Image (cartoon, rainbow, N blue to C red; front, side, top):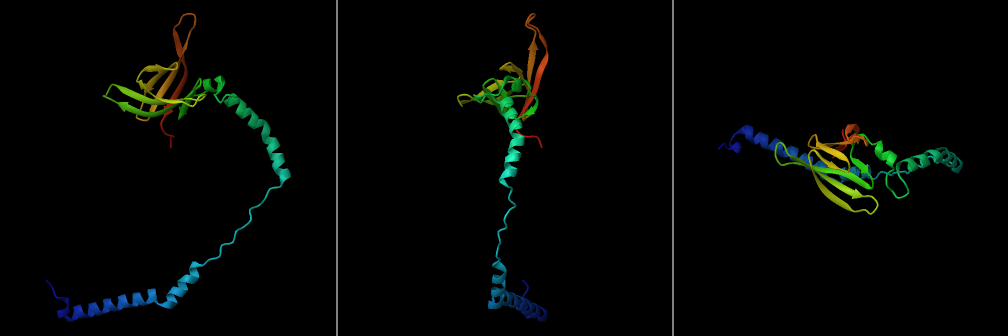
Length: 185
């Protein structure tokens, strides 16, 4: 073990270090430094008034957008809160929620029991009465007229097949939806 106090260099380094510590202590805790820092801490904040729009301008803007707001609400929902049939038939692409009849479907999880078998957990919420049920749907099965295909760890594909009423044969997919657990980045 080295004894630093036995050599001249060790004694000089200890004295210099002590001076730095004493200087630091003196500058941080003296009354002048504390008063100087307090002056910086007390800043007066002034609230600025935001520009105000006149009531006449507000009325004009509301009149311009009144017609479009009524169209939006009448197109998407009926009076009972259920999505209209037209809106439901036009759903396509990547969605987080899917509306089918009185139900709202949300993908909650995908479970792989082995390499070939995958099960999707779908939360089905009845919009009219507010009840929710978690349904387990196996890969390549049907729910509410849609075929479920597990694509990825966070997505399933729902395919609605158009059926010819006369021949009872499947013609082609009429609606393809990807139901995802998360919003894409």
